[in-house]
Amino acid sequence: MMKKIILALLLLPALGIAQNKISGSFSPADEFTWCILYKVNSDNYRYAADGKVEDGKFTLALDSTVSKGVYKLVYGIPQEEKNFDIIYNGKEDIEFTYTKTEGIQFAAPQENKVYQNYMTQNFLIDQEITNAYAAEPLDREKIAGLFQQKEQLQKSAEDSLKGTYTESFALASRTYIPTAFEDQETYKEKKRLEYFKYLDPNNPILQNSGFLLDRFMIYIGSFSLETEIASYRELDAIISLVQNSELAFQKNLLYQLWGKLVLNKMPKSANYLTEKYLFQLCTTLGDDEVATKLENYRNTSIGIKVPDFTWEYEKDGKVELQHLHEFDVAQNYILVFWSSACHHCLQELPKLQRFVNSLDSKEYKVIAVGMEDSPFDWKNETLRYPEFQHVLGLGKWENHIAKAFSITQTPTFFVLNNEKILTAKPSGLPELIETIATQKVEK
Image 1 (cartoon, rainbow, N blue to C red):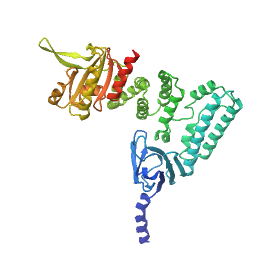
Image 2: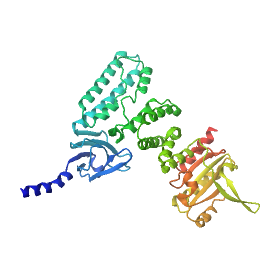
Image 3: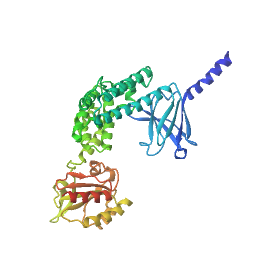
Image 4: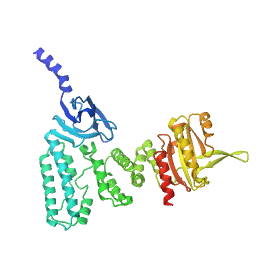
């Protein structure tokens, strides 16, 4: 009896170590070497496992600490691009194949296969509905038939996934489906109004996944009109949907949405979300770090008057302070953040100098902010560019000017008009030159 008890105790750790596994194959095999698995939580990604990919194949053991949920499998760099989501029910092994052309295909478990097929078929039916509405002559019977197919697909997925972990995603994916033919405008408007009817933002399964964020971006992209201002209506609907959720969750989710809007170059919508609700949430929760990021982005968005700052200059033998907002020597300004310790900056500034010297001095003036640890090397470098207006920013990244403009790298360029309103944020010198050429043509 004692031997059996000891044996059972010895087996307990093993049970915790080997519970289930994820195994897969990648193609082409020689392009994949390693993979990392992260658990998706409402506010972050948590490392779960990693393993080597050999001859295109890998296996990750999932011990008892790896709970059911949505996981992100990263297979390359950049991680934010080379990844895909996996739903793990906590009970079964996961098997899949992944190719660069076809994406991921699940072999097990069954609920993953059902959900993936549902999502694929739903997308294809929506495409057919869009094409049918655009066809001439309009085939009313075909459109009504597609609505029936969509309803049948939805019911089949909900029935097949009932009681599974994946059921929540299928239920929340349901949208308005007409029971008979409707004209396109009526269908689209009803679909917009009922888009979130079946989505519960307080469902912890949905919260600990990227599902809500993905649905929000699809919603904005599907129903906003051509002008970005129209997306304000959609943002209001999203804010209203989540306002009864826990405050920290609201802030994390809306901050992620803000990041997506910034990434998709929708500054007006990003700033609207900030001003309408997100900044208030950060203030209530005391999240000064995120609040500062929101404010700095808003202050350096195209169409916004940039933050004011000052520099010293000599007048009548006295040292005076010059405010950027009061600086009036040209029609436009090129604001460049650089550093004497930045090798790339020292290569780019002479090129910038040659370019600016080819322009009318009354049209463009360079204001060069040196982000420095000490003034000595900076002072020597400024002598090479006497036509620039030089500003010393001691403290480098911690300098108040750099922080106000959210500077994370050098050189960084901004183009301002005479009112110090930001008109362009070129990503480098070639884009700056192209931007100014375009502005001159448009005039």
